[in-house]
Image (cartoon, rainbow, N blue to C red; front, side, top):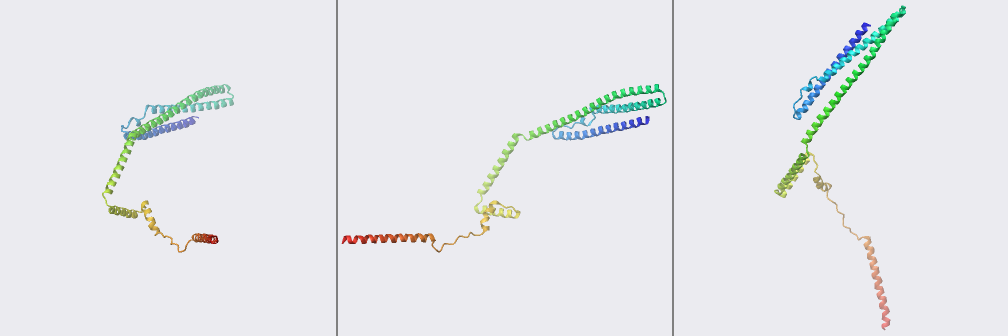
Length: 271
């Protein structure tokens, strides 16, 4: 049973060293976060904080709580081992017929179990306290991250204020207007032949660069399609015109005959 106690103590010591190593690892990670914070501080014009890389009182308190937790765990294992040993002693004493010794061993075992129950309660309280502290530290880290993010956003908003954006847009519009004025002035000083030469040179440069100018493409489209073929003039009269002419001729013939008949009817009356 003593060997079991030694093995349990070694396991608890190993876990304690592991917790200490984890604490050191977290401290190293906090150093990395502190370096990032210092970098942001330099960007925002503030000096880096040296206190962030040191072990704080909270870190020491958490480490002490974890050490106390490991000691209580070791004590709990020891109580459990003693209770199991008293149970074996009571069984052996009863086998030898020593009932009184068996009762004494059972009473010791019951006392060890009561101590074990108290130890379990203390251990549960201590573990809950450690968990609450670690979670509070996580919340604090989140709050610090949000605070730093808000500060960075505020600094960016100061650099990109509405007034500066409007000023930049006004300056851009003024620059574009000035560029247009310069182009118009240069164009007014050039003759039509010079302007055509410039446009031709630009077209050649665009062809070399593989750039298609929509205006040039529209201008060259009819030429690329070839000359427009016009329809030939008709050599015969349309059929509709010939029908209309025949109808008109028939009407004139009927009118002529009507006049002749009228004249023939008037001649006997005159005689």
